[in-house]
Image (cartoon, rainbow, N blue to C red; front, side, top):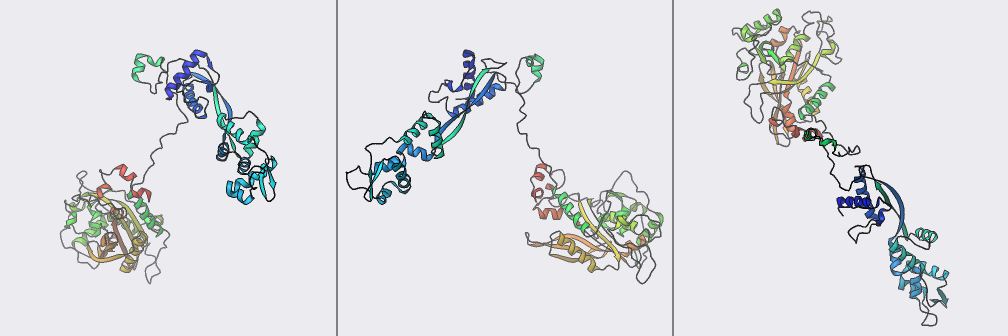
Length: 531
Ligand code: PHE
């Protein structure tokens, strides 16, 4: 019966009788449905609770116990007790040969023969005759079967507690708890069920119907909608992993917050010639306002412009006229090496004889100061291991693997007497920690490093070597104008953050990873969030 019809029946009965003393007496329209049955009372309870929530009724519940047969009990109700079946199998006294115990077992089954025999003897239903068994009486009354049949049909037994307790002990009967209810009218009693309002609307306020409407009560027990969890962007995740690799290798993180740099710090200080194609408009985003950068420290500026124009420190320079205008242009940094250059200039401050305080933490994680080879005197140099992971900008034509902005990972190591083998060694450890075991190095060209190496990693899924980074030993033309002693070598390597992230998570279009086309849902469901 539909819940609404049942609710209506309850209200109509209440209207007629004032109270419903016992819901088991409710006459349900469907005759085959017994109001007294266990399941019906559960359905009634649902209807009662729904009416109660609107204060249309009140009710009390009562407990009743009824009894049902266990599977074994049901079988006995049908076929008789074990003892009755033993009795039935045996021949009457003097009629035919007595039945041997072996025959009896065959006849009724072992379990029944065993239990049934004992009980039948106790009841004096059977007797021994020679080696066999015979009926001792002409008829029997199988009380167990009758009791069980009564329970099966009424749920209870008239002969009382003791018999019931015995049947329960024999596991032929189990108790079942049931409920029934007494129902009264509630404060909002009415025979018409108005569907309660779930929302207070502007129309209800305007028309005033809110005063007479009934509202559905809040269900404070209802479970809420689980809030969507946050998700780390794959790039941030890989960034964090790489950051931890640098930190565990003793590197300190460089400040990289200045996206806008001057051409001086991005190129000139690195000994990138002023005519270099990377500085072209097609490759670099220049800033139009403000037009010029603040000038660098004059004597350093002079040393840099001189090494470009005329050479020095063993170099012949580019022998091309120096342009101050070119040098003071502002741009979006094209590589994080611009920030590294700033930091190296700062690291060389003691070597230039400048007073510096508290720079140890900035540059190293516990490295000790070293003195120049063969000299005991401190020339101010402190070794350093630095890294950065941040955004860079290039005026690229955008496609599946190129964006106008991406992230660079960069490591820089400064110490006396470093060799190319040190650089290769560092990179092998670094890439191994990133899970890249097979690396190869290929000679390359960078204006600011000599020698320079491109780094290739074997990609097992693509089954080929892919370029993963660029590296080299910074040139003396870059380091010596800063003031570093001649035996100080600085090497560095750089890679993009996007490339290893795309390889790791099988992303083949960079635009799904970075930029305005990134979908939040895609990030939330990405494997990177899970693994
Ligand atoms: N700046 C280089 C690049 O943009 C990477 C690099 C860093 C190379 C440090 C050498 C040393 O690819």
